[in-house]
Length: 318
Ligand code: FAD
Ligand code: NDP
Image 1: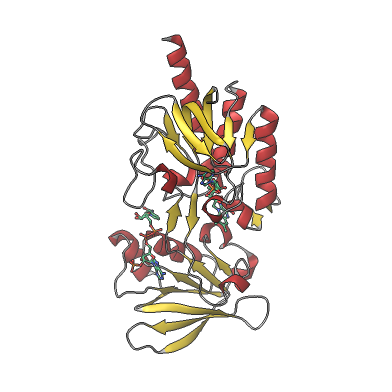
Image 2 (image 1 turned 30 degrees about the vertical axis):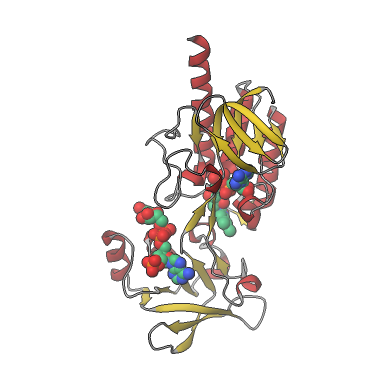
């Protein structure tokens, strides 16, 4: 059995690396499991799957997502974080120290910071792989302002709050926005529905699903759609296709160990990163289904490390 670590961080996106930087600078010598294609995503998290990041402060010209994550990792290492390229397969949170099982064995931790993120759901329609990041995106806030989408028709798929919010947001950039809803109702909150329905730039296509992303060249030209009741097919001309069909939080490995909400997100006490288990903190997208940005993930990573440090100091002084 290994020694008892002060802090183990699981996950390596902006939340995990920021937690690592703060914990290391507090002399807690954190151990991070960065994952090995965990949740289908490379170590470094969701930003490794994108090109330009233009909204992370400190980089006025923007920088590539993989480069941003490489820099965060280098900073975490520089501050004294130890990083294992392994995926955590299970945890035992029934008593402290907590047990963390990874490929190389079992580890013990006084505090645990969960930063395993979430994965945007994709649809696997024909053309998706070809046009992914060449017109297709799963994040309107991240990509909507790109020049390729300016004054062009855009399509959003989904009927929840995210889809409505993103459709509304995209009207700032696109010439028009087509919202594809697979049923004849929106799942979104009443307020969000009202906003979408009142926006003259948004056309809602009820009972409609996307069946193919089309384009003659390297960029998306349109989306083939199908009416779910009549079966009629047509093509909506569009330069952008935004999936807003939900995210999958990477929490399967927690299996009943702490409180999750109905969608599988870790529940934290409002205004904190504290979970239902004393000594376990959750940061970033694994506990956030509203903001989902690199900078908000990093901010909560900072909070998680400070809360872990505070708890350890209190216990040491007790
Ligand atoms: P993630 O980035 O999801 O990272 C979690 C990491 O933990 C992953 O590497 C995962 O493999 C690992 N992991 C999961 N399970 C385990 C396990 N059991 N053991 C070990 N490791 C594990 N935000 C912006 O602010 N600006 C943008 O321009 C932007 N562009 C985006 C573009 C795309 C295509 C996507 C998908 C997202 C984009 N975002 C952007 C959102 C941003 O990427 C996320 O909000 C942010 O990455 C969340 O950070 P996180 O640290 O919570 O988790
Ligand atoms: P939801 O799970 O609420 O909605 C997903 C939507 O995508 C549903 O309308 C669903 O259709 C549709 N969908 C799922 N799969 C497919 C598919 N394969 N093809 C077509 N459509 C599909 O996810 P959200 O991300 O919208 O919201 C998640 C949570 O976050 C919610 O609790 C929401 O309230 C919250 N949220 C709150 C915000 C706010 O308050 N400002 C902003 C964003 C999110 P169907 O309805 O038929 O199942």
